[in-house]
Amino acid sequence: DLPVERFIGLHRKGLPAGDLDLDSRHRDRFYKFLTDKYGVDNCAQIATLSRFRARQALRDVAAAHDLPDEALAELQELVPEAVAVEEGLKDYATLQRLFADNARAQDVLAQHPAFAIAAELEGQVRQASVHATGFIVDAKPVHETFGVAGKPADLPVVSCDKDELERLGGLKIDLIAS
Image (cartoon, rainbow, N blue to C red):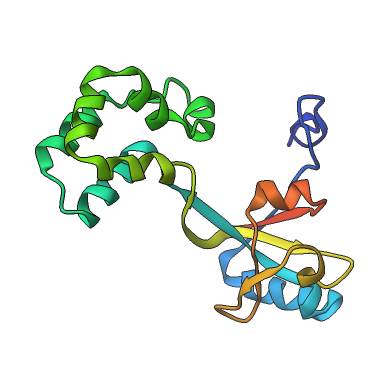
């Protein structure tokens, strides 16, 4: 029994995602069914985008510019832990605030100006991959509305993540295999 509120609750801001539970042995057959029925141009997998968080941006900049481990450790110690997942995942100004408000961080930045690049990277897309279960079927070819990032397997991958997909009016289907 799934509560209907999970899908149409007033707290939801956008369209619900359709969740379909499948035996993992049949997922590929279901993809084939959807593409046969709606056309391969109207079906795609969904991308998932990983963004630079504060600590990762600092690590990557330190590695790329061969900055001292001690300076990196000092800055990472000053980066606050996310209080809540919702806050931490959407806050991409942690380093800007740190460099503006913290004297110790400003000292490290003065000695190693390349760390300023980390503040610019924070929140930018670090890497894209294919969502493990996300899939879209659209009334028109997916490249017309969402763009296609590539076709690593048999199906194209739209060039936006689930949030952007929803903003553009797409309906995400999760093909969950067990």
